[in-house]
Image (cartoon, rainbow, N blue to C red):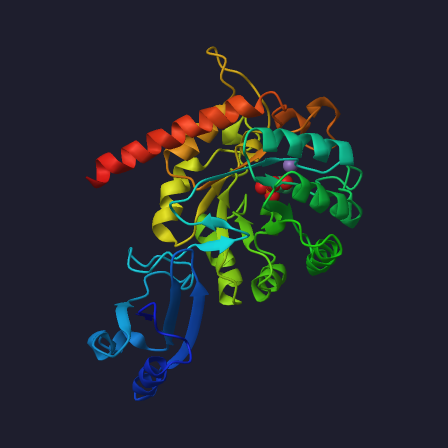
Length: 368
Ligand code: PEP
Ligand code: MN
């Protein structure tokens, strides 16, 4: 059971103390207080653990400071929406708001390969008004003989150039806890010119120790990618490790699942799950059309599959798009065939804007 306190209640306030005392009357119950700074409000919740089935919600509903009492429906207690009853607070980071209503395009390099690529990409993003990007420094590759990413060596110029071109948040995958320290150190050394959203890649979707590490720190929000070969339920439970460890600033990303049934795409595109994640969790939802599709095949109307699946995710309410861009895709050291070129960026931004507008209109129609 989750007891949502009114926004003015603080975790160490008298209402919380009183409520915990009432809960203590039930011998089987323990309590856990969780505090979240959301995008629009602060949220203090008291999670009741133990045999709550035997406890009526009325026990807590009338107590001072209580906004509502939510019975737990999903095992993923902290990120779950619990039949629409849990509050979806979202979060702000570096002046950017991430909620189930916000929308951001994270366009950038799958893998950083040179300072020149980074500068050309950031310059192009600035020209189209995009302030959020991706830049892979640590790459989890299928073969040990493939380019593994430039690692910490590229971080100073990535961050410095991000600052120069007005980039507020860089999504960057981490493969081990040491990478968090390296990112932190490089940000400090460059004067914190930008923010980093740390990405947990699909290959680490069930690396529980790594999930706990990114959950125990508060410096960076986390972009969690669903596991490509596990059920959605398993991915949601794995994602719960991040929130259960204390970090509530999470975005859940869909990136396709591994199956030959998705051929000729790299993965079976799963963007029909956008509304499912929005309904089952409190998290903003991201789609990654590049890693889902894996190439830039064009249909008879001249529209690429990357554009098509992006539109499918955005029309379904996605809050974020992670897309690969490269100044010279044919020379990219990782995933070149799926990357948009820089001249393709502005029309892509326009296309996404058009579809997002259509989503806003549909939403209005259905909620009228
Ligand atoms: C990536 O976004 O760079 C990446 C490796 O994606 P995924 O973990 O979804 O394969
Ligand atoms: Mn990639």
